[in-house]
Every structure is written in structure tokens, then in C-alpha cells.
Length: 279
Ligand SMILES: NC(=O)c1ccc[n+]([C@@H]2O[C@H](COP(=O)([O-])OP(=O)(O)OC[C@H]3O[C@@H](n4cnc5c(N)ncnc54)[C@H](O)[C@@H]3O)[C@@H](O)[C@H]2O)c1
Image (tube, rainbow, N blue to C red; front, side):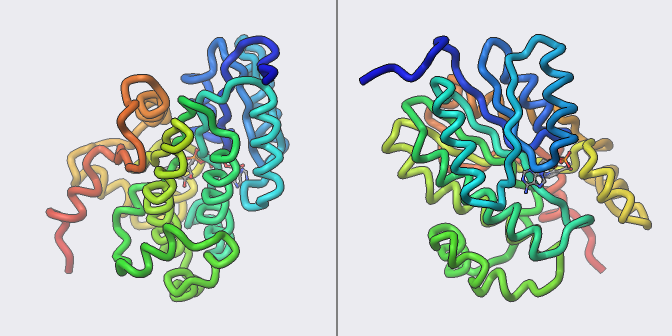
């Protein structure tokens, strides 16, 4: 079979050219063909131009992750560029700015499309990391709900009881979507293993990006920042700290780690579970 790699370079794909995506792209992209995907042409152009000027071999591909055909096209383009080393899925929307429907379409369905489309083109050694959220650790779904979210075909997901029960509540939609990312990746690990490839999630706590700024702006009583103080972290995380976790999961020191979640939240979820005082 002909080798499709035309310059011998490894390919890294990053969806979402926002705060985390651009930090991750910079961490993983040196000496590789980097493909950045985002639904916002302005955001994509801005980051691609900046990174090109910094010497990265970067190409932008306008992609809406909530559109299956758009994600499949991205996977095709990426696999045609060379050996797919890492795929990092950061594209997403937040509870503060998106409707429950939009959250399910982008954060839940979009992640399923990425897992499925890139599984078809994964090769030995490909590592997919999907950025979920600490919020997924607050979900209290039944075993049956989790099984359905983990394994139902994409066209059935928005009709599942766990999804329809949420109604218009964006925060609950975000929690369910991010928990769905965890269990979807657990279930997908078998198919990825069979290709010699791996798939994991990273669950950030509050990370200083445009998204957390929008969350903080909508949190008029300062609840989010107070929780960061009370849990002992005392600060937000940086996009670079998420890039470190992703680099570990994408690299050679995690070859036996697949189908799992890495929580990177400064201890906030543990504090919420065991120490937070509830009225
Ligand atoms: N920032 C935080 O505190 C935080 C915490 C936990 C989890 N997360 C998760 O981390 C991921 C990255 O967040 P961020 O902080 O970098 O946000 P960000 O807002 O800086 O970047 C998100 C990017 O996704 C893009 N995007 C949105 N919808 C899209 C779509 N349908 N298709 C393609 N691109 C789309 C946006 O244009 C934007 O560039 C998200 O999944 C988010 O839910 C963020």
C-alpha cells in the first residue's frame, strides 16, 4: 500500500481555537503538521495567522463539530495530511452563553461525532483527548442513563430520557453532556484499542479563558471565585496546565491509559463532594 504521508510529518488536529485549543496547539504542534478546526472564521484566522508567524506548520479548517458531515470532512483532510498522532477536541460552548439545546448539539453530539469520525482514520499510536469538564463529575445519572449515553447511536442521543429530562436548563444540560463525554470515551476505548489507538477525556476545573470569563460575568454574586478560594486552590487554572495534561495523554508516557478521565481542577470537585457546606 502506498504511504499517504507526503513529507513524513506527524499530524496533530485540535478542534476549538479558543483559550485551551490554542495553548494545546502550541504545546503539541512544533515540527508537526497542525490542523486547527473551529466554527468561527475570525477566531480561526486569528490563531492560524499568529501561529504561522511563530513558525508552526498550521492549517485552519472551518468546522462545525455539531455537524456530522463537517467533522467527517475534517477527519478525511487530517488523515490525508500524514500520520495522525494526536487529536484533541476542545471545541465547545458554555452554560452561561448557550441554550440547553445548543449545549447538547455541540458538547454532547459534537464529541460523539469526533470520537466516531476519528476512530475510522485512527492508526496505531493515535491518541484522542476530548476536553470534558469537572462539571461531568457532579452528574447523578442512573446506571441505565449512563449506559444509554455511552452506547446509543448518535441519532438517538437527543431523545434519551437523561437529555429530555433537562428541559431548558443550560447548567443541567452542560453537566449531562460532560458526563456523557466521560462514559462515551470509556465505551469507545474498545474500538480504539482494536486499532492500537487510545481515547481519553480531560476534565478541567475553572481555567482562565474567554469561556470562564463569560461564566464569571454571569455569576454576579461571585460564587465561582469564592469556591476557588474555599477549595484551597486559590486561583483559576491556566490553559497551559490543561495543555500539560493533554500532552501527557497524547504522549508516550501514557500508553496503557485509555478509556478514562483525568480531572485537572485544583481539587475543586473533591472539595464539593466531601467538604462543601450545603444549606
Ligand atoms: N474554561 C473553562 O473554565 C472550562 C472548564 C471546564 C471545561 N471547559 C471546556 O473546555 C473546552 C474549551 O473551552 P475554552 O475555555 O477553550 O473555551 P473558548 O470559548 O475559549 O473556546 C471554545 C472554542 O470552540 C469554538 N466552537 C464553539 N462551538 C463550536 C462548534 N460548533 N464547532 C467548532 N468550534 C466551535 C469557539 O469558536 C471557540 O473558539 C470546552 O469544551 C469547555 O466546555 C472549559
